[in-house]
Length: 295
Image 1 (cartoon, helix red, strand yellow):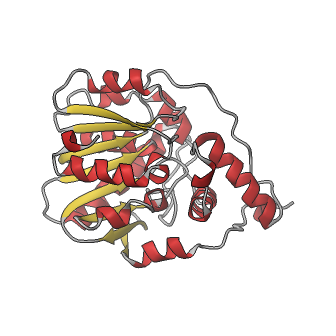
Image 2 (tube, rainbow, N blue to C red; image 1 turned 120 degrees about the vertical axis):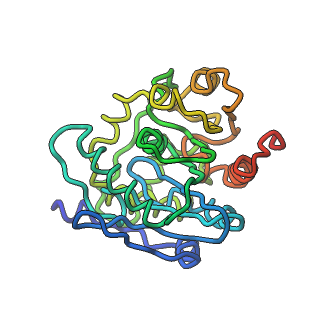
C-alpha cells in the first residue's frame, strides 16, 4: 500500500461533530508565514481549552457546548496539529516545542485582545503547554489539568496500543481504531462512538509534531509549575494508565491550599469525553470557584 493510501482518512464526519463545529467560528490567526487555527464558542469570561498529543480541538467535542453556556471558549489546534500550520523542525526535541509556544502565545494575545488573564483547561500534552505558557508570563486566573502529561510520577501498567494506519478498508480501519481507543483512551466500549473514532483518525493523521512523547517524557511538570500560585485542579479517570492518581495528585498539589485533585470513576485517559457530564460539572464549578460543591 502506498504512503498516500496509508494516510487516507476513511471515517466520514459524524453529524454530532458537525453540529458542534457549526456552533462556533473558525479564526485562522496569522503567525510567521503560517497561522494558528482557533475556534470560538459562546459568550462570557474567556476559557482556553488545549488538546492533547496527536489531538485537535475535537478532544473537547463533548465539553464545548456546556462550557460555552458560561464562557467564551477559545479552542486552538496547536501549531503542528490539526488545521494549524506546521512549526519549523530544527532536529531537536525542544526546538519544535519552542516554535509551537511562540505561535500559540502570540496568537492567543491576538484573540484575547486587552484581556489581562484567562482560565485554561488542558488535556494530557496540553498540560505541558500550559506550564510553558505560565513560564512565559501568561497570566491565568485558574487552570484545570486533565490527565496531565509530563508529571514524572508513577504510571499504571504499560499497554499495547494496536496499530491502525495499515488498514485498507473502512471496516478494518474502524475496527482497528476502536481497539486502539479502548487500549489506551477509553475504559468502556460504548465510549468509542462515531465522534471519537472520527476525532482519533482525523487528528492523528494531521499531527505533524513528532516529538510529543519525547518532550513529555523528558519534562517535569511539577518543576515548571513550582512557583505557580494560581488555583490549579488536576483530574484523572480512575482507569487512566498514564498515572497512578493517588500518588501523582498529592505530588503535583504539594499540600498547597490553592491546588486540588480529583478522580472520576469509569473513565480512562480521555476522561472529558468518556465522563463528559461529570467533567463538565467539575470544570464549570472549578472555574466558578465552587469546586467543593462537586462530589
